[in-house]
Image (cartoon, rainbow, N blue to C red):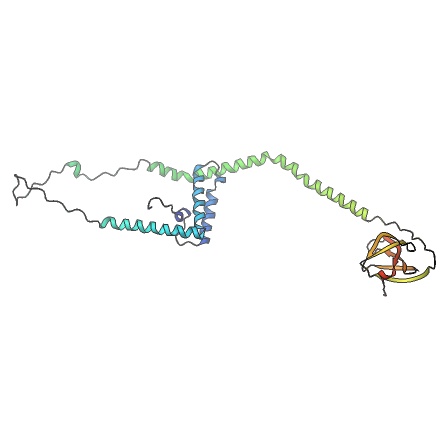
Length: 281
């Protein structure tokens, strides 16, 4: 386990005790730098973006982070234990050399001959790839800058290629606004056409003069063209509208409604007395 556990804290560049906000901040900075959309086709950036996303998905989830921290701590304890036990192991004691006929007990054995090659200090071999890696690290910032400039130039080229299409689309909005204005003007013009004043039929019988202002008390007060035969029209007034009456026939008043908002709009006809209420100014 010591060599296979991924260090997500090291990937995001935060400590083991980092807060959720610190983890989010580190993730935003790294994913902005290594996002594959800014470096399309670059395997280096794609691999790093996958590592960054994987580390953030684990550390940003409380349950996954708790499970990972438990394994992470066990991994560190095991690595520390192996490091401490390595130098404390006792070295094997040298075994006494067997006595040979040429050497009697108590005699000093001759020192073994040491070859000149063994007496020399070991030569540490240099890493053949060290120079290449150092060169890559030195040239990496220039490569990133050149890559980003290339992507910006490619994006600008695509925008210039679609500039003609954008001009056509810019003409659509003014045209739509013009059509809406024409339709709105037509509706207003039709609404302002004065209503034709209908001549109410004079009923047979006693028609007495009446004068006064009334207010509509019913939800709908319909006009009658012929009150004698109960011929009702489709026109009506709603509650609160004021009218002027001039004639009376049984339980009907001959009413005139003049719109205040539109002086050309006028309605006339007979209205039932029960739908009206005396109005005094």
